[in-house]
Structure formats: C-alpha cells, structure tokens
Image 1: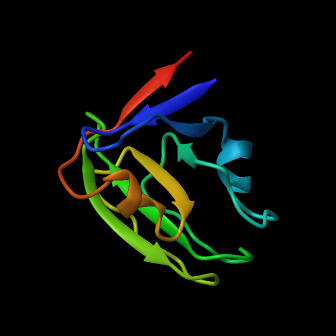
Image 2: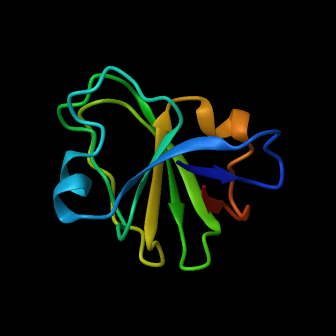
Length: 111
C-alpha cells in the first residue's frame, strides 16, 4: 500500500502510482471517481479529455514540492509546467482538504 502526507494532513492519503507510459496515459480515464489520489511520474502536464469528473491537479518539482495546484473540468488540456517532474491528481476539492498547496512538500510512503 502506498500513501502520501503533507505537513498539514491529519492522516495518510491512499495513493495509486502511474509510473509506466501505459498507466500514465490511462490515468483517471473511464473512472467515476478515485479514493485518494493518483501520482503520475514522470509527468509535467495532464488533460481531462474524456474524463467524467473535475479534478485537482498538483504539479510537483524534483523534490516533491508543489509548484501549483489547479482544478480542471472535463474536456480541458493543461499546459506543461517547465519545472514539474510529477503530477498528483485527485477529485476536485481534495487538495485543499489535504493541505496540498504551493510550496508544500508531499511525502510518499510505501508500506
């Protein structure tokens, strides 16, 4: 099981890893939601074409610090973020609840 935390999160958040090209392409397509979050690595941009729900997207640098967080509605294409190395995706509104915002470090835990 994989989880992540932030300095402000009260408990670990379940995390799915998408590290292969195939898993990154699939992402959250075809789903009605997600329990926790999905980490795309490596990645510097995402799209929501064909998605069924709005998502929060956090772009992470090489030290897993959040560069920016955006909410994307279905049918959108995000611009690549030059310093982004990984992208964290979750249902819209989740990042704020977890304390994921610009400058915060996300720590991944493999159990």
